[in-house]
Length: 304
Image 1 (cartoon, helix red, strand yellow):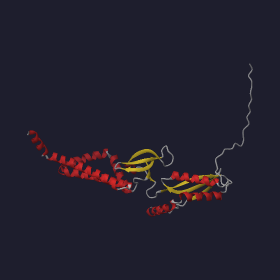
Image 2 (cartoon, rainbow, N blue to C red):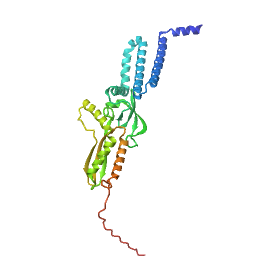
Image 3 (spheres, rainbow, N blue to C red):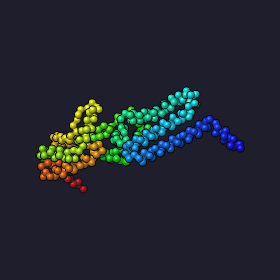
Image 4 (cartoon, rainbow, N blue to C red):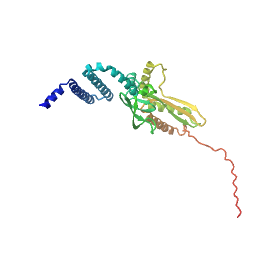
């Protein structure tokens, strides 16, 4: 029949055969990638390892797909390499931001800038990295209209090209702790030695568990970078001001627990100061009017 003859002739054409093979191959690659991703989700419980392996499988799928397409049409690429070169130059110029983002992804992946799970500040935005794709980094934002380091619910996507333009602040990669400080004003006339003992005791009670881990992490920092061997022990500093004696409580804390730790420190300080029966009192700013200028008020009655 003419229809079957037409189909046979059409299917016998080399280009049509290659297109059919190409479509079938891409379908097979896509199915295999999806099966592998589902298998990873089922068999690997660790979220960090599962996320990385899923990314590797996706990237490998893209590479295999590109190599498959090139192998199908390899015999036709030689005659048009000049046209591809000219077109490639134009595409590179028009897509320079995309290319820069891809280069940024390579720098992030192999330069240890950050990884999913790290808390960072990028382009003035602070948050936890929840995804690093080829072109963009996705953050769960912290702060904003909320105080301290809590999530505000906004998801922010930033082009990877920013790593070549702006500084990258990482809260957790090499040293997963931060130095924080609580300032407590104490009235003049209080027992300053007792106050220092109370503050020091509260610090060791609340953040003492971090000291061992922070020391080990800081040793790795000293080995890796040219930096002094700083102390991670809690410290209490005293400074006299015009209104009160100011105690600064410096300590190391987990980068994700700054606010809750500060709340515990303030709570314990107030509890301990209440037990001193006034020997140590919190100061507050007051204003005293020392002299009131005289007022001369005269009431006159206008004549009718």
